[in-house]
Length: 287
Image 1: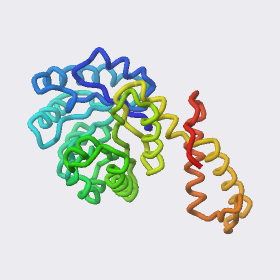
Image 2: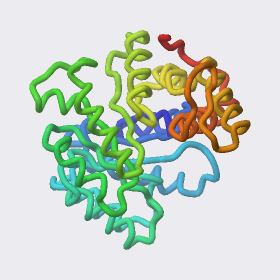
Image 3: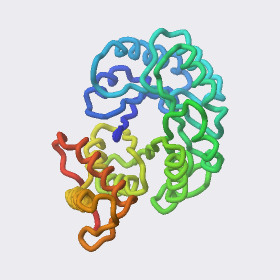
Image 4: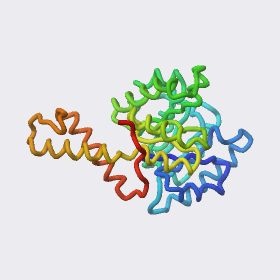
């Protein structure tokens, strides 16, 4: 699930286009992109679309970002889902600052006998500091980072340097809990070079994917998260050397090869296989 495309819930005409965009996850948004006066209309449109798409056999995962679970609109979202026969593949709960913020959504999904995965969107300093508890909440499938809200709450810039700490904390906590972390969007739609740099940084930090706010961002994100040819060649050399050494410590290209490097090489090989059928070229990486 490398590419996540967010689509406003108030624009149902775009739902089908989003599904055909090539994104791994299409996330219909009921929160920030929907004005207060159109929340109910958007909710009805999103649930109707989810109901129709529940019968599809293939395509991207379909998710819904509800409103904050502590808010009145968030409660209405959960109640509407509970009364609905079809659930999306995943639900993103925003403004998460403790495990209590997602408990109710997890319980509602389980009560409906749904296989829906619940993800937490962490987007405040308080949420970042609470990550060790959040990531171990029963039923949590993954975490996402919300950079814009974090920067506003922390009073910092929306820059790579300013975001390094919260992004690192998110990835570290998620890895410790054995769940994936997905990075915040890059908001300048006209800056493809900046998007590529930002996506490469996210990949290097350990994020499993990145959110896009427009379909034209998907290609750059896919390229950034695909292993480079150099990475793949190194991984193959490590795995070949490890196989020949039969469990003993060895070297590949002058580099010591032990269990950590072998594990990393297997991850690269697996990701390369996942992207083998893609028509895009991996983004260049600094040596």
